[in-house]
Amino acid sequence: MHLINLLDLIGTSVFAISGALAASSKEMDLSGILAVGFIVGNGGGTIRDLLLNRTVFWLHDPNILYISILPSIVILLLSRFFYFSERLLLIPDAIGLGVFAVVGAQITLNMGMRVDIAVIMGVITAAGGGMLRDILCGEVPLILKREIYATAAFCGSLLYVLLIHHINRHTAGLIAILLVLIIRMVAIKLRLGLPKFSGAWFVKRREHE
Image (tube, rainbow, N blue to C red; front, side, top):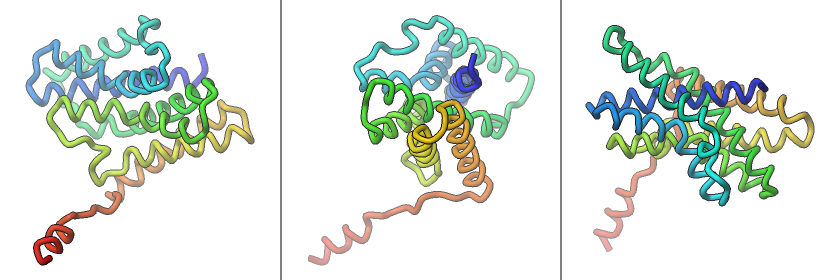
């Protein structure tokens, strides 16, 4: 198994755990928690496959079900006895974000799609699950807030599609994942974010016309 494939499985599990913990904080029942965990772990890839008109990846891979649900069950059981800080998931989550960005871009390129479409699908694969998590948990999606998240996935996808013309895909993927990890960690450490824009000035202008 290639390192990126292994990281893909780990990323799926981490995303699923983050979804399960988010659902648990909203006091959902067990079925709701596991459903949200599965959706978060696989939502981005599902949206990608539907848009690309290909068979949804987890329909022909039973292992996806286990790596999405079992870790969530274990964490939920342990959480009755131990406190799990969300900060513990930051690095694995950033790695998963990078892996999904690379995998999404690679799958799209394998289908003969354009490079720009590959970058977009990389972002959707990486950030789609988190967006669904926030929607299901009644929160404003993280990718619509100031925090740098989808932007990191975009940078990783873009770097990957640029590098594969010069180096082998495995190395290009690892470099792209590392870039996403660095961007996320620096943004979190320094509390960086994209600028916010308000429509208040437009409303006031219209009121004076």
